[in-house]
Image (cartoon, rainbow, N blue to C red):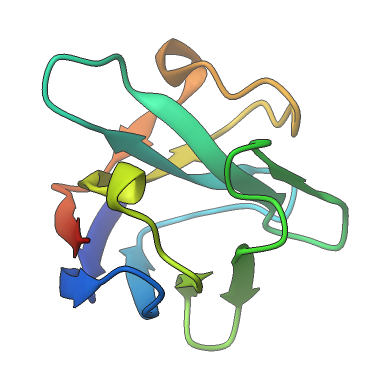
Length: 125
């Protein structure tokens, strides 16, 4: 059974930075995708960034391109999301997710098989 545990959320002022981490356990193949999603109150869960576990491309939502970077340290079994130049509209619960059948540009939440519990990010103006 795959388990995902996020950390690194917090409260920052606009323009600040945070790095989210997601440690996984259980079997995750190189052919899988991992992604970061976020969900603000009253809004749908949206895919922010995604990457293949093995070598491959990455995906970023237009709203975070140039500001967020997704990466994975396979040796540490940790997925990261470096968030720079944070804006108040980035405020949300952030979730780590894993998907067996990887389709890097398909970030619909319903296609992801495993989820973490989430970590809150709050950006004040």
